[in-house]
Length: 312
Ligand SMILES: [Zn+2]
Image (cartoon, rainbow, N blue to C red):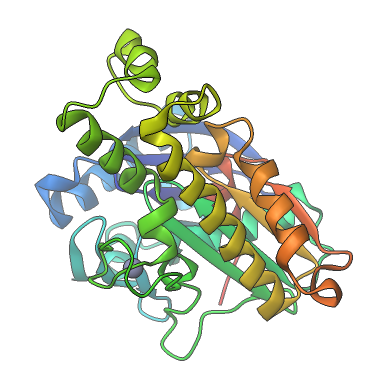
């Protein structure tokens, strides 16, 4: 039996899987990241213990614990070197969990795990070179080259979300400006819309959002297609930058499969198709020829399945 954990900024997902990577049990809880690393680590430990007892599984039955975590991870030591989202620096997550359970523990970046999970379990693991781009609160990226995750010199490569698409663009959480994430990350989009509303802007968006008392990505997209003046430029930018970001990835990597997912894609109807159209218009013909561009299929399960089956 294996345990998979996916630690994100808002929630932690858990899976109990058998040796064939079949998901037997799924659960999730709030991260409560504001309470700090030790609190979140203990929450993970207690949740694992609860899942084991609910499924009549003992620690001795476990062959592996896989943890997908937002941030830059040293996979050799299981240390979360830097997670701007969780606000952790040098958190010894892998060592801590391994010493508590005495079970081999592997920690990997959550988007690397999700890209690997999609590639292997949704797309049949046939493609050799795969790029995953996930638009959630930020923008995460995963790169698979020759069927292996590409991590770079210090294991922290693949930061597609921090490709700078406009040197003078919006401020990014990483400290730079104009990153892919600063334009297309869900949190950043919502922040710009909230700013508009705080300045007194109303219009179609306001009518759509006020009914549910919260702004969703679907409201912004709907307002755009209803001709809302306030969100016009804002949503055009999201489409353009997503399309251009994907175009650059196709030109650089010429992957056989490009997977696009995350809450911003899931929550909208036409964004993926619009961005894909831009890739078709702007990528170099030989670079895009035959490249499959697909929407992610596994949602929350991608990282759990990926982390259960990947190693070094
Ligand atoms: Zn950035």
